Length: 384
Image (cartoon, rainbow, N blue to C red):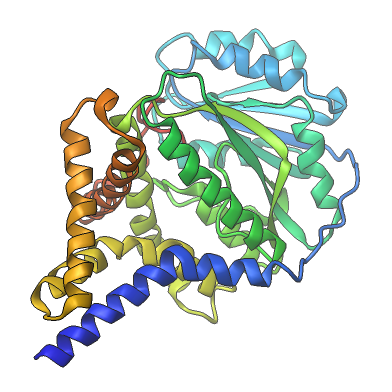
């Protein structure tokens, strides 16, 4: 019995190491032989597509940001698909009609994925830029994104989302560290070939590569880049194309966002099961390593804890003690006010919450609660 427990324990530890350190190390090594992108300033006709619902409070500022981009005005069309908005969103957008902004009303609510499909179908641009109502682009974003399409091998480009610290979030430090890790990983994936997914708030594709999203799709920013790569093109990351956003205001907001994202990962497997076939998915290795393994980490963590408690020997006692300490710090951090938590407790708490969100996301998916409905803007930040 003990040899079997040892095998299970060390297999779990190997899986943990590979997911959080091994894969990033492999990609960093591969990125040393950089696959360059032949960037050059070009100005094809582009279409910016925003799917929005009840965004009257900020859609005006968003459109001001877009119409003032450093890109030839006669080469840009902005399409806002209002998905059954019941506030003044439509009126605000209509006021920008003379500035190249087109409003499309769906009438009834159809969901984000369907609204995106409507917007792309109406677009005339060679390049489609996907944006949200929430974030703000740097003034040269469109030029920066489009420059990548000078390279004929590039089919999708993701920009960089900078989270601006304003002191209003209780988890800025923890989210900042996690987000820097993710961007570093995404950059190395890009430098070594293609990224797995894009930043939902700022990415662009060649129009002819777009494949309509299945109704209810949550992670269009993961499915669309994967579809592009499956057609023989690269999906790259350009850190010079910058959008700005704020941190989730607290752990609860980040929890809601993460649960939705992770349920979207499970949903994607049911929508596109052939992504699990290496001969159908050119990014199979990266997709499994970057996305899928994280979905099973809660089970792996539980297995590592249980087996370490059952095994005899100093190594396993130390392993069990370390795990109990980390989880204990996380639980205490959840019970105490944020002002009483130190950096270590906050990091443990953040890690525990993210893995708990994975379990919750799986539960939502199992119950069929992964439909692409609109959620509150504070929860749905659409970053990962």
